Length: 351
Ligand code: SAH
Ligand code: SF4
Image 1 (spheres, rainbow, N blue to C red):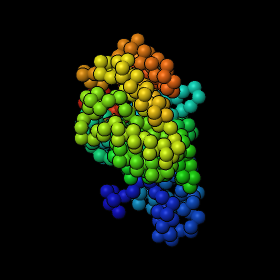
Image 2 (tube, rainbow, N blue to C red):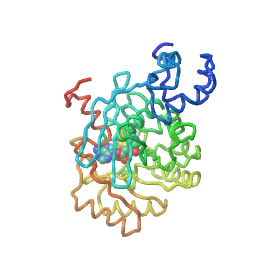
Image 3 (tube, protein in one colour):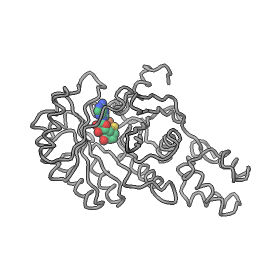
Image 4 (tube, rainbow, N blue to C red):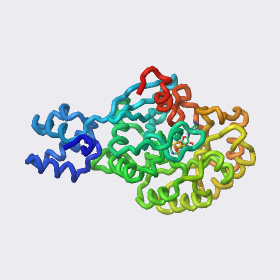
């Protein structure tokens, strides 16, 4: 099998493992053992699969890509947040972030190398899409995180690099491998997919009927302001985004969260907060405010007073609002910053 056609070990379905085991003339129970190693024990190095015979371990390592990424660097912030830069097998890089909080541990996973949406304020989109991640590469990010913390996280957010809904097939498979009981068995309600408002993908995700949470990066309460932040090619009208949110709620029963990156002089006026409150109320949605983390000279974070005022207006309208703490701002926590730094040679290691 050529390297190009090989599949990642941690993207194999139960049927694929069973077929492979049968093709190697091994007894059927080997398939359960292999699945158990991969998805329950999170061991993807065949040599460590101690209850398998040596020939089967060797065959696994020959037929599949086992460990496909390495942690190239780990940047830790004082608050415990740490960001892993993962070097992929083709030399590309993505990030996964481990975010501890007193009551929960969250992993933030990437879905693409680069991003085709190219929001003007976001480091991930600066060079457009390089390639999609496959499902196994997303699961492997999760495994890297589990190895770091010595167990499972409480929550997983697909909020790293990329627009996951534009890589739907792979994202859907990664969610299946994480959630289904025959694989990792992680609760769908503990997973959140974040989207820039890619309407066809929001509807597709709703149609899966899974209990995953949807976070929509609204960033503006009117289309003209949104247009200043998100280029035309993949931006949908707010009206259509809200229709898709309603559809999502009907299909899944899950509440929507609006993410709102607060940018100085662009979307941080009291009037913006009032309009956002009206939308959130109508949609029964929560709001997550993210003060802009500077990645380009063109945009700035609003003064703290403005941020607090924005939050207070939403709260006065009884909107459930969280102001995302500056977790990891010291470690380039904004989407795609670490990868961008590496690409530009700002860190010591070059590509
Ligand atoms: N593509 C998806 C998920 C990845 S981006 C999406 O856009 O929702 C995840 C979140 O990070 C988005 O809400 C985005 O607006 C935010 N973000 C990106 N760059 C940022 C920055 N420099 N400062 C603050 N938030 C940022
Ligand atoms: Fe892509 Fe999200 Fe960054 Fe926009 S904010 S460029 S959609 S990763």
